[in-house]
Amino acid sequence: MSESGQRLGDLIDDYCPRCRLLLNHAIASMVERQVVKVICQTCYSEHAYQHGQGGKKKSHPRATLFDQVLAKVTPTEQNAPAGPADAKKKPAEHARYITRHKGKTPHPKS
Ligand SMILES: [Zn+2]
Image (cartoon, rainbow, N blue to C red; front, side, top):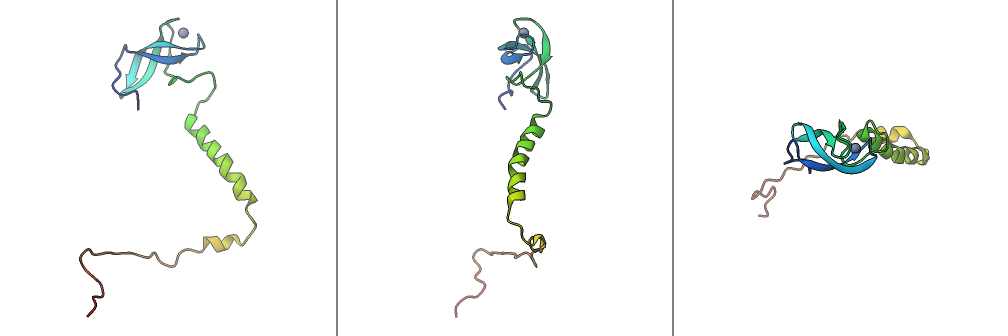
């Protein structure tokens, strides 16, 4: 995280929703070394730290990313050739445990 090492009052670049520009901001509030609120040094409005991004409305960036991944995965799944779906569900009979003992040969010759 690039936010580490920052302190209250430090100037950082962030998107100001009021100016609608990437501008200098002073860190107004931090939680666990993460910038939470910043104050625009141009219009002096305090707002949540946008991580340098703004404009787009995204309340849950992680969910959005997850949806993007899902959107890529789901059609492939549907377009997959129809086959016995149950065949895939067959569980492995038993996990194969590979145990290696260093320096110990299981079946030494002679
Ligand atoms: Zn501003």
